[in-house]
Length: 126
Image 1 (cartoon, rainbow, N blue to C red):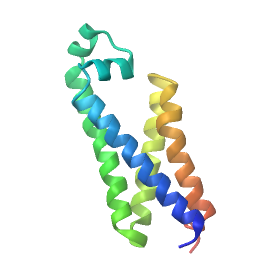
Image 2: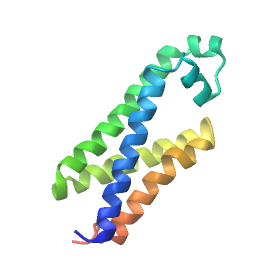
Image 3: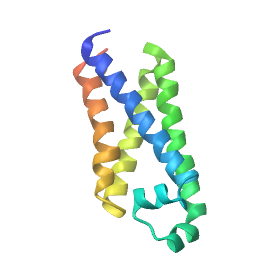
Image 4: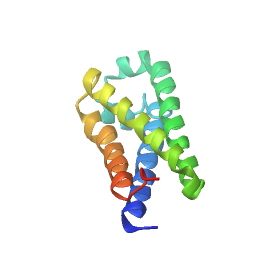
């Protein structure tokens, strides 16, 4: 494996970890001080939106799971990694446009970096 593909896989792992962290924040810490601080929520708003946040956290867990699955498949997992990185990129762009610009940097940019590294490493060539 060339160095660029190795870096792409490392970035993919980091994107997966980011999404595991988001899952924990949204599913388990949403109404706790750490979760409210991370998202800038009032206690009342956090309480009122906890079910929606847990649902969103679950979806972030699916993104993490897909990326981890792709990594565990090794070379055969390239299509899985590319698909889930693209899903993260789209989710991040949508979140940045509709919720918070911060999502662009936390979610979309790392996924884009991973996709670019796979491309530079020759992953898209036959």
